[in-house]
Image (cartoon, rainbow, N blue to C red; front, top):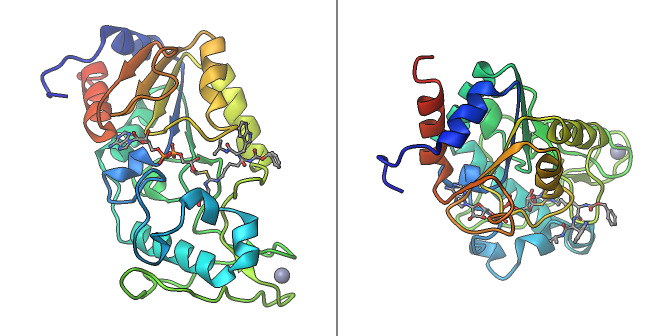
Length: 258
Ligand code: BV8
Ligand code: ZN
């Protein structure tokens, strides 16, 4: 998408008139920071595994050190990464609209590191491990975990209170989303003027259904994704391009005097 292409006027006028703006992000927003998406082929020790297979309670029961090792490898990748221009544009937009809600499926903290506040993490956060039995929450040791190239099996640490295994602070397939975050996300999607779904394949439920809620609410809905999804034909505007290019341009064009 060459940078001379003007931003669709419907987006600029809708954003300038908007009181309530919502953005739903997925792994594609962190792709330009070098964080693999769920679509990307796994590498190293996890080459033979599908991400959705590893992100289940069953996988953790079956092979805890494989799954804990995978999450430590992902955490090391995220700690070594930096927010990109998409994360920064979203943090800027938050300051320019009256009511802004950022909903993410990502378990990384790149939105927060770019300056976003009140981020609704529908699928949890790598930085919030907790005991799988007594739910006592823990912090990871400081620094980037020193892992062998390609990752390794790592025994999950044990809970100091009850001795059970500590698990990653994420929502696995088959597990319910955090209630407060999910309710707030639904409220925001049902009462917004402009809704972006950005960097998501819009496959995983119930997160993907937020776009349906915004469409039903009559919001201006905008998809940003270099590839097609099931929503191409149902959103107001589907922009086929990388978020790191498209979002800064939308902010610049809409609030150029800002
Ligand atoms: C649940 C945390 C209630 C862990 C994740 C209804 C129908 C069918 C199935 C279901 C249904 N309801 C529930 C289900 C089951 C399941 C589900 O949705 N399955 C799918 C596979 C069909 N949902 C659940 O299990 C949910 N829980 O429903 O609980 C319940 C309970 C008991 C019994 C029944 C019901 C929990 C789902 C959450 C799972 N945890 N993550 C971890 O991270 O390890 S999901 C995880 O995968 C991510 O968080 C994210 O949600 C998803 C990956 O999607 P994306 O983020 O979109 O990433 P993806 O790689 O797919 O795509 C990247 C996109 O970016 C691409 O489109 C690409 O083109 C684009 N892109 C690339 N580069 C760029 C870019 N875009 C912009 N710029 C770029 N530069
Ligand atoms: Zn415990």
